[in-house]
Amino acid sequence: MGFFTKKQIKSETKPLAGASVIPEEFYGTKDPVVHYGQDKKNIKMDRPIKTNGAGFSGIFGFFKSKIFLYILLGVIFVAAIGIITWYYLNQAGLLGLKEEVVEEVVVEEIIIPEVEVQPEEVILEVVEEPEEVEVQPEEVILEVVEEPEVVESLISFEDKIIEFPRIILTNSVDTDNDSLTDIEEENYNTDTGIWDTDSDGYYDGQELGNLYNPSGVAPVKLIDSGLVQEYVNPVWGYRLYYPIAWKEGTVDTEAREVLFSSITGDYVEVLVYKMNEGESFTNWFGRKAEGQFFTDLISFESRFAEQGYKRKDGLVGYFIRGQQIYTLIYHPGVTGYIPYRQTMEMMLQSFRPSKTLIGIPEQAVLPEAPVFDEVEEEAVTST
Image (cartoon, rainbow, N blue to C red; front, top):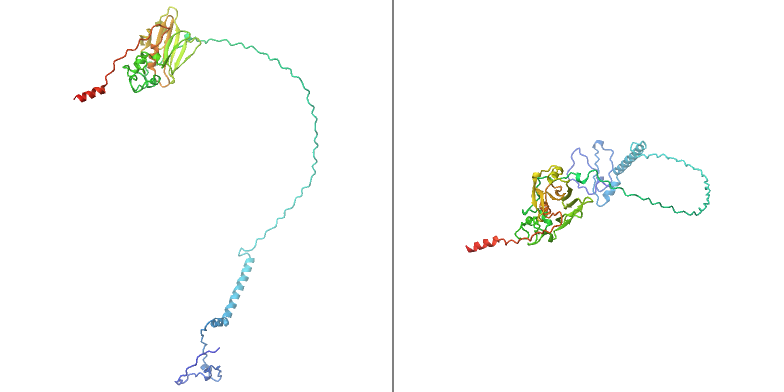
């Protein structure tokens, strides 16, 4: 490969004195010849000029050069040193890549000797069937149990203490102020918001206290209304009315104590006592009515013309017939109020010690009350 490819242009100028002259062999692509006779100091070797070859000739020329060879040998040398270094470091365990040595655990095999198991002998027992034995039926002995004798209580009925309600008790709610509480009006089909339900001129409580029907147009008697029924004591023969919604029950076998109970827990107790021979009601009252005052009693006549006494609050009543004293006592429920005070009055008014021929008179019909709304309308139109 030549150092020059183009023709050199000869300089027409003369070389300066002392300057080196390039031999003619360099021209015309001739190989230069070293002239050894020249002064070494004046010999100047120019470096070849690199040229850029067209296509791949320049690249292939580089791979053929000594520089590429030196680089390749350097890379191989460095790689070899790295591999050798990695090998010795790995063997020394400095890189942590050394394979762990797994010790083999040898499990000894345990040989269990075989033991012959001889089957047990099964002995079959012969069970003899039991002989049939006739069973004689046992004789059933019926014991005659005598009925126990009825032992009377040590405290006789006459010696029992009579319980009385407190004298200061208030009625339950009465919305329309017709002397019937709202609870009572449910038993007599009356309206809790109307003073006179049947509009016959009598207010509801007034009709009930006189044994007339408060929910029917006069004249209608209470016993014919289907709202009450008459009780007749089977032993002592006394009679009285009580609400059909109530229950009656006899306490003792002699029917000397009878209860008439409501659904609210209030009840009326009727007791029959005997006075001692020659004893007056006043003496009996002082002996039996503990905690009560005779001055709190007022005499009255029932609708069947029976004479009696009742306490001022109307919760206790007495009727005397011969040696018997019939006592009616109202017992309030758990509320402490009196929801059936007018019902108690109705029972006192209907009480008769025995059957009587006296009847209740027919109820008089009142004239129609004026309609105030129509009067006001007439007054307005007239003006």
